[in-house]
Image (cartoon, rainbow, N blue to C red; front, side):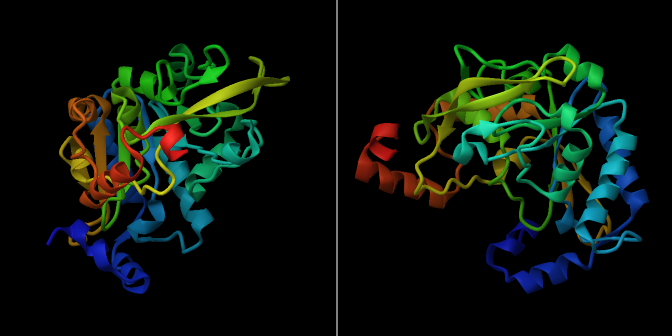
Length: 315
């Protein structure tokens, strides 16, 4: 049985009991980051996909989530100071309130993302939903236009041309995925860039009108502007789940953090140019990156409302 398959049918108590067997310390984390740095050049940006609390016990830090997150943040900041690296600071609040301010809109992700944002509010990008906190080599982020507003005719497409994900791909970016037990692909946001680029038929555009508050270069004066957020969404009653293979088959390298006997604790380093190899399948309307259950659900919904899915038949 695959180590990932443990999660297929688990209860929460046995799951946490299992991960608690793994212990790692600061030396393990620094050794991990040293291996990652040896794998990529300094001019390639890195996204950290954090699920740190699932990795087991961080020796000497304690159980408090905020302390674990802060320790990780301090180590990452030290080890990756010469690299352009980023943490997601996503805020789905915009879809409800229709307003986004990079300094005040909440981050809906884990404690590590929240702490990094709180200490670096001026480094948050302007995407109302899929913003990032940019860290490390700030000259790289500024020189490559990551703080620029990606607005054309007041329209923001988070996965379109000149978006964060588009620039990140062109820069040969890398994604560090912290994995435990089962590789969770549901929140692997980069797949939506591929889906948008391929124009998959199980998603469609839905516009959200709202207000984006920005700052001038000195980050002192607020400026409000009306925008249309062009979001490539799935039908509300369709749960899209993805196969692990669309990431693992194209992984640049895989590392173990902590005890070697607990090999379900993996850190996967994926490169965008490798992940782009999934694109031809998507362009050919191949659903193979999706789980079998999702494929079956798409076919069932197709019989009910027609295909491709649109705002008119699914909205």
